[in-house]
Length: 236
Image 1 (cartoon, rainbow, N blue to C red):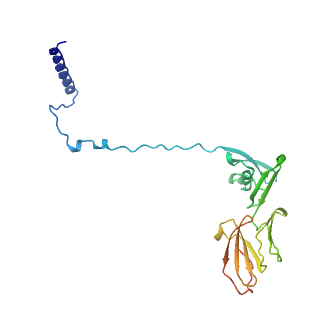
Image 2: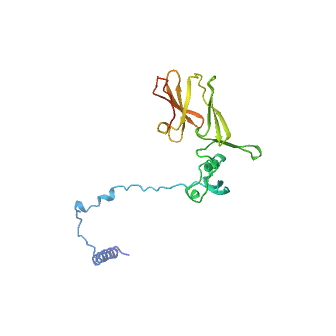
Image 3: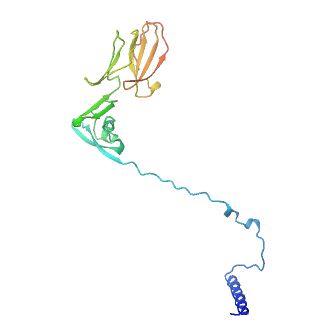
């Protein structure tokens, strides 16, 4: 193809493109022109914030275990408890039992034969599948002992009239310290804890022990009452 023919075709193509743009309504400038500042899309130059996707892991697997409650007629009733699969130990199952019936179960007349405020201190399974369980409860339901020669202190853990456990507390060799009360000083150490109230028979000093089960968890001195004719008659 000759050079003259190529120039002719190029000019014809450019003319045709111009006619198409005009036909489509697109304005055509004959020469370059400056855009007004407010017509420049500066926003396109700003980087967009990276998008983030939040993913949640799968819900922990749960297993169903069976515990026994009691009907109003005194018969056993099997109910299901849902526990995380990594918490299906014997102690965890027992803790779900001592928690008592749910609101729905209680409305259906189901009761628990486990005394209120019972705690699971330990549970193991030995040879032959024999389980050993150690339950505890508030000292208000147990028996607290003090030896007024050696200063030893101990607890019998009770279920009605049956001794279910035994534990020694800290020895207090000064036998002028007397145990004068047991209560739940919930304003000091949290609701549901057991506290032992002490009074010194000579100095009139007063103190309180906080217990976690049968473990000493802390103490506090109370104001002294030096007139030992004042005796603590009770706690509420």
